[in-house]
Length: 414
Image (cartoon, rainbow, N blue to C red; front, side, top):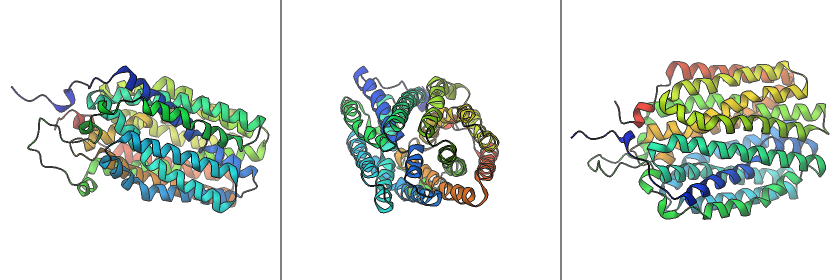
């Protein structure tokens, strides 16, 4: 009988306990990471930092993330326990939060941002590897959609709590809340049974039923055309996207400092509700529609958002504009690891593939904050938003012209 295509293999059967543990781990990781979003920009603005200095710290973190993505992915591929790597990353992030809260001077904040960037280089690949190792390629689309739902709910609730703390106590309290979430995150990670994480799937290895296929060397991924096209499109996307919400947070702080943390929290909570609603649907549709149509929808929302940020002056209406960020986040949260899993399947280097994509993302993100901060200081925030929208449109065009459909690769089709 002819061999069944790889994509038609049955999903793995992890226990309910492990799946629930992954749900809550994703939830609490999102909580922990929320404090390092636009709240950093608000906090440093209240400490009388200039936009250039804020952009410099954010760019330094992005540069470290750029250098660490591929080594981080390779580390997760080589690790015997993805759970252990994820736990160390969570602890490092909480230490970083303590440095922000304790002493908000430039060298201390810079050191904290670097530590956070290094931890994030392994945390994302570790979560994706645990997910793929638990359910396998056949069910990874829906699993990633579920991950995105729990992450969005975690982001939303954490943003609401942190926004309230920032309003009622101080902006520094946001980072104290981040540290308090360390315990629940580690307990959730501990509840995932290590034996149920299949190493073959977690690392995108060659299937056991195809032992004659030669192993893929790590360097060969740099000649993987779909992977590099996808990474280039994401570079343009994050060059436009990374600075957009922090820049808007600084604008809101200057216009209404008392309500800044509340408005920023709303700008995080509202799109996250949309992500929670859409992401499981995105995971299912990626199997029927394919990856490319959904990616085009996600990329198209960003230039529209940038133009609206430039045109809207009312701080309350900015929350409505942020709904477009929910559309984009729902698509990319599911599709980025899913496309990487597609194009690296059978190589044994799924997490290195994530690191390659993350490196391109880091290039865009590290340049974005400094570019937007410079344009904003010299020419005003409206022109900065327009410039970011133009870059976002270039990313959408590249996705439309060059990115192939990768669902057929996942199904073992030519």
